[in-house]
Image (spheres, rainbow, N blue to C red):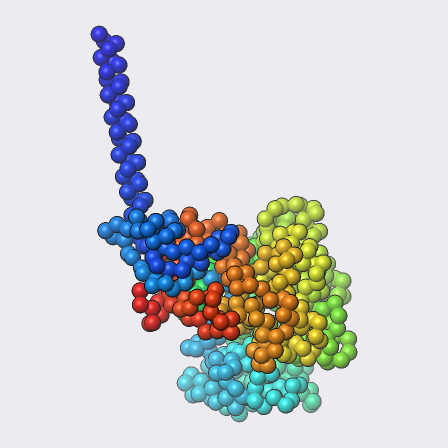
Amino acid sequence: MEKEECMKKGIMYLILTILMVFSIAQYVDAQATEADLIIINGKVITVDKDFSIKQAIAVKNGWIVAVGTNADIQKFAGKKTQVMDLKGKAILPGINESHGHTTAFAAVRPPFAIDARYPTVKSVADIKSAVAAKAKELGPGKWIRGRGWNTSLLEEFKNDPKGMPTRKDLDDVAPDNPVILTDWSGHTIWANSKALQLANITRNTPDPDGGKVGKDAAGEPNGMLEEIPAFALVMKAAPLFTVEEIKNIVIKGMQEMNLNGVTSASEPLGPGADQNDFGVRGSKVIEAYRQLYKEGKLTMRVAIPLLYGKYGSVTYEDVMKGSQTYKFPTDVDPFWVKSSGFKIFADGVPLPPIYTAWMWEPYVVPPGNIYGGLVIPGKTEQAKYDELIKMVEYGHERGWQVHVHAIGDRAVSSFIDGVEKATLKNPWPKLRHVIIHGDFIKMEDMKRAAKYGMAHGGMPSVHSLLADQFLGFMGEERSANHLPFRSLIDAGVIISMNADAPSTYPDWRAGVQAAVTRQASKSGKVVGPEQRVSRAEAIRAYTWGGAWQDLMESVKGSIEVKKLADFCVISDDILTVDEHKIKDIKVLMTIVGGKTVYKAQEASF
Ligand SMILES: [Zn+2]
């Protein structure tokens, strides 16, 4: 009897339990199927493995829960679900800028600084009137910053490719304000006499290691400070922004990135490197990001390779000491603010008048034996090279991703030498050391880069911007193989793409067009057609490639289930529009973690 009762009870419990589990499962299921947001009637360019096209997406808690047809996704609509009808527009994964300086980019633009880029300014005269207006606005004594001038695009130097402006041009309009205007590439500063005077730069100031203080025929400083060690001299005198000011700059930077469809960006930031042309790099920017994260104000994800020592010329000692003393904040969500190893500099840029990108073959113009060189301090080329290898090995041994600015093919080779040596000692998988820029790279080095799982983060817009100029001082062959995206992909290297803002404006549509057409923007000439890539390949580089470089391709970079809901809606179908009109495509909407962070006026959904 007792036994029977017991059994009955047992069975009842069992039935009850089954019912409970069943209803909980149903409840959980109901919760899961009710999405926060469904996006329907889109051309969903998923950038998954097969580059498949879908129609609709369901999002919950900032994550993608389903991708499929309208009918598949309608099932996820509940009472509280926001329904977004794209009316056939294309939607992509959020753009992942694989290298750039969001904060500096904002700091060097209005309202914080003068926009000296072409076509905002077309001549020295234009720059002078902008500086005059700023001096009037700020009053005497205040520092005036600006960014973007490029002598090859200035009216006065059209027929004088070697000509440069001088401090006196700026003295004419702002004698009582220190003025520092960085060129478009960030490798030369044009300063006025007041700035030089406050920085104590005189005829007796020697060139710092790796930099040059420009002098005129009479031996006086002419206002040109070439390469970062040289303009660090003037930056010592300039005030730095506070964390509070930087937060406003970061917000402005993220807004500008968002309106270009950017949802993630890599941004090298100091604990070192507090002295620079923008007054913003450094640990204070990381602190600004941390505070904005805490306040729920981030509208873009950021991956941060750390900068140690002096910006532009980092030593082994800097990396060692910096990494031992600086602690990256631990109270941030790495999906928002992520630490990504560190960044160092191998060489400079391949541009007149400095030609500092380190090449295996000399520059064609100017004639002579100019090869560029490493910007790492050291008495001999060998000592600099050894220092580079040591830094790469140091990072690799500790399991850190090493990002190296390397533009010349010899600088790229040297970096890969370091990765090769380090990997042979410690064959860690998956560190994905990053060649930042990698404009020139030999075929055998592409193969090595692929073998060691390195990422290549180039700027396609630089090809269209500089192709005409490169033909002049690099020669046909090297110009044709400048940024060899086709060969890189074929060699098995994972490529990401970027604008390196503020070097160029963060417009990935222009980047895709440049990579697809290889057309020089000035002459319209196609330079290196064999290096063209498909639209799908360029889009993949701007989305999944950046995510892969961030070691986050499992959670972002494509529109797939269980990935972050980061999207970018565009005005025209990028896969079918005329290839010369890709750059005219507008971003209509940007969504980060399921939240709309930018909506264009013409967006009707
Ligand atoms: Zn950069």
